[in-house]
Length: 134
Image (cartoon, rainbow, N blue to C red; front, top):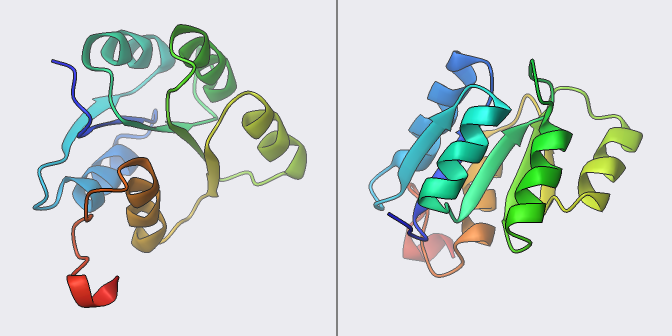
């Protein structure tokens, strides 16, 4: 079930997963997987190999940095964008040094998410983007 159009959202807050899913799942065929914790995220990643992982840092059990490190061990090419309400420079640096492709501070705008999808899937147009916008 591997495919480049899968996006994995990892966040312990169901409302955040739901909001991100609405932004991403639009009309362009992106398939969204959701995980409430790191263990489930690793399992889903192994099964589906999504082209993009949106990963919260603050979660019970494994935190996002631990999940990121494990993902990068399993797949050094994984495209992972970290998300956190805490935008401390040291946390951002640790995430990027651990292999994150980018870091988005919450709260974020839908445009930031569609831009992230565009970076992960450069040949695709995210929902809401028309040719004249490019």
